[in-house]
Image (cartoon, rainbow, N blue to C red):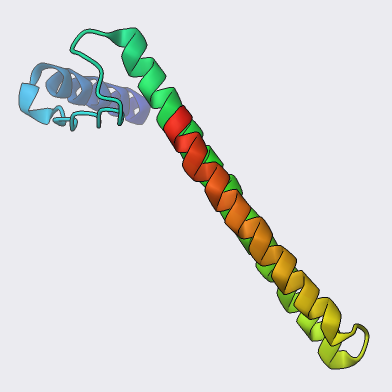
Length: 116
């Protein structure tokens, strides 16, 4: 019983000391401004800038997942062709179609970054 009282008192004293000593608080870094760079005090522009940057990052993440998926399909089809389960022409067609899809996705991402 006495041990709990001592622990609570020590916790209370510690919290009191930490709350009154200003040097204990960490100095947080300033947040990075969005790429659009709104004027000072323009909260709507700031939020829109962060939404735009978040959309670009989300689009890039989806594109990376697409690139990895096409690479996985290419390796899987190559492995099937080596085992005789698929023809080598299928590997070639997948390579050509995959390259076209990747180029088209890169084009769309570039265009979307300028529109947003």
